[in-house]
Image 1 (cartoon, rainbow, N blue to C red):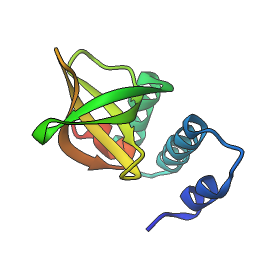
Image 2: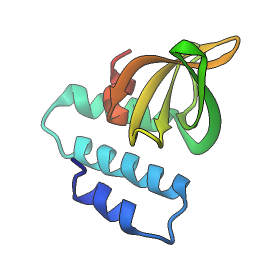
Image 3: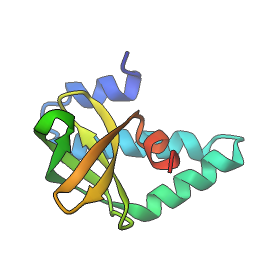
Image 4: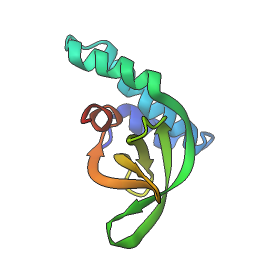
Amino acid sequence: MPNGVEMCLMLEPELTIAERISGLILSELQEAQRSDDLVLRRTAEAFQRSLRPPKEIAVNFSGGIVQTCWAVSRGDGTYCVVYMPRAGYFSLCVESDFGPLDIGVHGPALGCFGSV
């Protein structure tokens, strides 16, 4: 179920897809910065340093499926975080010779980023 910020972003027709994605990430980062959890705050700081403007990319899924998604973090040579618009959430992808490969880690952007 979407939270209030996600609902607001979905209902704003003048926003581009990239702006909606950036808004979702910003709300996660703001919530993390207010947290008493030091690990969450540090994860958010590291994620913020790796952010890039959302960019359309092709992501490979098991079974030979390829979907257009949006890269939101600069890859570290091994992993990157992408937004999957069909699903409405983020994914952690492993970088490969064939492009990003979904590895089944899905959910909030910080959760995906922090799972590495």
